[in-house]
Amino acid sequence: LHSAHEMPGKDMVSDSLVFHLDFLGYQVPDACTLKFLNPVQSGKLRFLPVVKPGTAGYEEMKACFVLLLKCFNEKQYGYELYTKELLMRFFRLLYQYGCAAKHEGSNGESGAEEKLKEVLSYIQSNYRETLTIEELASVCHFSQTHFMNFFKRYAGMTCIEYINHYRITRAAADLVETERQVMDIALENGFRNISYFNKVFKERFGVTPGSYRKNSLENLSLSCKM
Image (cartoon, rainbow, N blue to C red; front, side):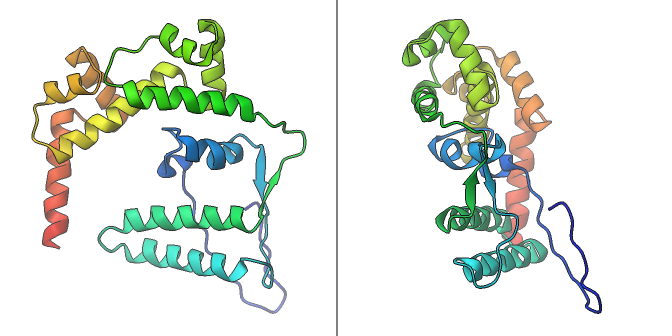
């Protein structure tokens, strides 16, 4: 939203919701983010700046937006999950009712996106194992140099960054959902060096794995009491 103007003689109230696409999983690309979020982030698609009353989908999108505001303002238990659900619904409505238009000058790159989906699927199926650039490049039938450039261009991060991000995300879930030792969790999620695991984990979450587990469990206990 670049600007809004009050009409003469009328009061105006405006509500805005600002969020990062990471909240919807943009930093860990999957088939859904590649198809619906990447085109928006990269500028290939643009949403209509205004959805006017009377147009298809207006009432549904308005109702969804009102629920988003209510959810965020009241912040009841689990509101983060509900906020994410509603944002996903709003994106779905924008696409469903044709509010996304291809940006002039953008070219279709479905072939490249299909290759990226293949390699992401391969990583997600084998992230516990040692993965090499040579191995991943062979999935796309690319040279290693071309593969690294290709991955950075279409995924928005280097291949190593994505693998670490995916592994750390899975490890963080294991810390909260299981009682396994930190070293075991690191090894089970593809990290062969516990010092490197701790370093990557702290870069991602700002705390050590042990502190993350303790803080998450304390917050969960507090929420249950409330």
